[in-house]
Image (cartoon, one colour):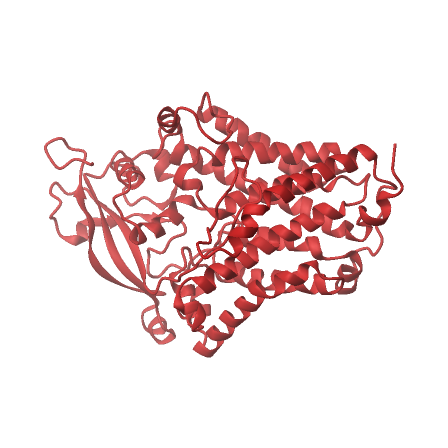
Length: 489
């Protein structure tokens, strides 16, 4: 049974290309997220991880948020969840569920949403990033875009545009209310150098003339505080607004590593791109797509019910956007839907890095040449090494290492990390780029605080070093597992 009256206002027949990008792009990022989890979760949060989930569940007793691991966790179950997530994501990227009835891709995306929410809700500090809840909200909303048998629903496209609005405008308002550097246009004097995980082009971006850095800030304010309103404008204005957001996000992709945050924003922005505009920009994109004839009444009812639900849940996030106590990367309900977003309300002016070293020496006061440095995959360490491009893949340990100097190095997970290094724990060492002891146990480890800055072009030509670093102090003095010596806390 179909309702022909739905065609005029409910069916967005000129947005089939947008639906393809939204469904396949979101599924691709879920695949990356599950792959990242499978590779890192056991060492970070597994049965013998730095913050073991079983211990967390014992302390929490009953979690306020839903998870498959509520009653039982095992590394084997975690890996099974990841494999299911990877398989379902891959099918959606290939577009196979989309060939069936609209409930099929809906169930596939809801499966991804619930499986990944189960992981996030026990992920503790290692899963406390804004892009986690962004992926969850995107997966749930995209689930109701239907399949190739029905036209894309207008209300869901509008809700995705509303998600992009909160993501962009929320970040813009956080900056305006945040550090003075965003108001006096100096934020980019520091950002490329002090961001959590620089990329291969970050140093070149940092060395741009300062007037261009001010242009960057002005462009950021325009893209986040003005452009999002035009996502709801008639075409082609909405598509132009989406294009501006996509271009600015691509600049962030090229100049840093922010997991899948920027890629998710790019994918979601296509909700405002119509088929005629996409065809005009890239003629290889079809102007007309073969879409379902009419929307079944049952599907219209389902989509409208979800639309009402998400609109009701939008009340608190809407108030938050204009609140003086604006929350950043916050959820207002246990299902992680219709969240508040934002990042970098202030920009750090100096880059402080925690460098971890070990030694085989009997006594910890041995000469410095006996201390060897552990190498991390993403965070700066070796001053000659070119930073790598990792995004959309997320290196969780490296990211949390950036936060240590901003908070305190005396965090439980970091002491657990040092203990694992003293034990030469293989899963933990697998998170690193370089183990200077080739799997053997060091007698002592320590954490030292360094001031890092990008080398100028002249300094780089003279030394071949991309970073200049200065030792500040021992953040954690030498510690050992040997009973007669100082033990880890």
